[in-house]
Length: 173
Image (cartoon, rainbow, N blue to C red; front, top):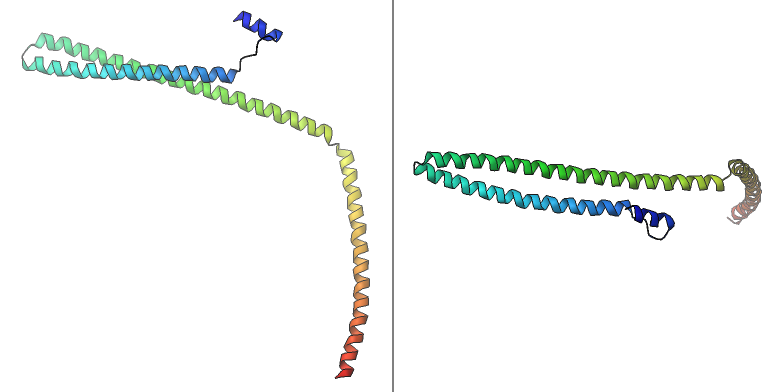
């Protein structure tokens, strides 16, 4: 481990991705949980066989052997419960790994977002932007006034032409 870290620091070996390690660990945990499930099934089958055998011994009136098998049944149930607890703990560890990996991803995204915002702040200089916006507002106001004057002049010209044509129409009738 130390040698690999030295090689990584010298740039001779690629650094391991922690998210890849998390995936590997989760696969290993899932594999162990499946193994535990198989063991639980075996224990349950053995419990059923012991219970059936205990009934047979009870019917045959062999009480001492029946008590021995009953103790074995109790022990197998305790073992099964321990297996369920171990599986639950493995599942908990798996979820914690997933949570930590998600936190690492979120932290990475936030870091990149901060870098982007920092770059944008360098690109956009607020005083210059305000001056440009003020100049644009003035130009737009001037353009609006000029447009309004042109429209008024056009309306006046149109109204004189319309009145002349209206008079012609009236005279024609």
